[in-house]
Length: 350
Image (cartoon, rainbow, N blue to C red; front, side, top):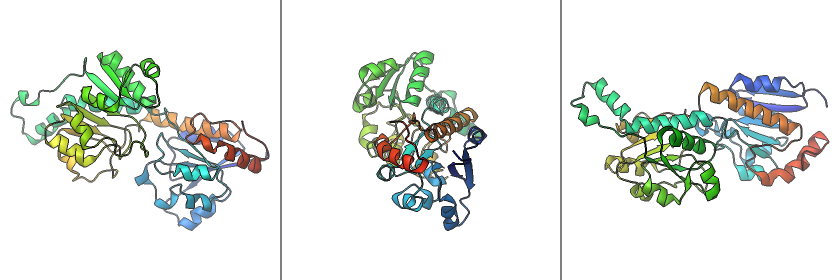
């Protein structure tokens, strides 16, 4: 195989230098950096002949022409693989990729520790009223300590929506560290599988009605969009806490604001927003019972290095003809195999 036979491109930055280091150890792989600030036609000209796109999955970070749509794929006909910087793939039209024989792969599990710890921090923060206390002290508005009575996590019921890499790690933490009862709603896992991950499998309505804390850890897709709205917040226990460190659009922001303002919910921790970062005057940020962060749950040094290594090693495996461990659209595999054969002159794994 000739040197630099496999071409990868990305825009502006990579998650961690480890991505470039791992790929750079292979003489048959070239990596090209492009810039969002460059003219679009210049960038698309540079993409010609590329085989893999290492793409951000944060939609507000990416100029719309570089979202992976059917039009984008038509402009980069050599593309075989779209690899995301994290678990999400909000900037990618997966059906369009499947139709074009392009694989979509992500790095799920690479940032599970960072996100699970962030969710736990938000659970503790809202239940202990840490942010509310901090705000009041800074205003010189503390009257009585008893006005800031919080709640312990120990022995409570925690409901986890989506028991994948992150959800199961959070289940482990709260069960072992805080002796919590853990409920899980995940239609893709059996009761036995949920039990092996430390949780009881229940329906969503039951999880909402029985949990003191609800934490969201599922992807955003057609199945989960708008899944938590006014009806679902009303089902939650009075004084319960809601945390979302997963993806935007799974919960209804206006409905959550109403549930908090009415006093039905005790507080919320939010790392994801319809607009990221949210405007400073966002109604939810005006509430002392809300802890917010700008989609940074998985942005830790350790998570970024692991995600970068996951991404680089997965691309190498694909270029070497292997089947990827984190494939989003397995139905694209047959068409991809034919395109791979036509591109590199040999067949990948069956």
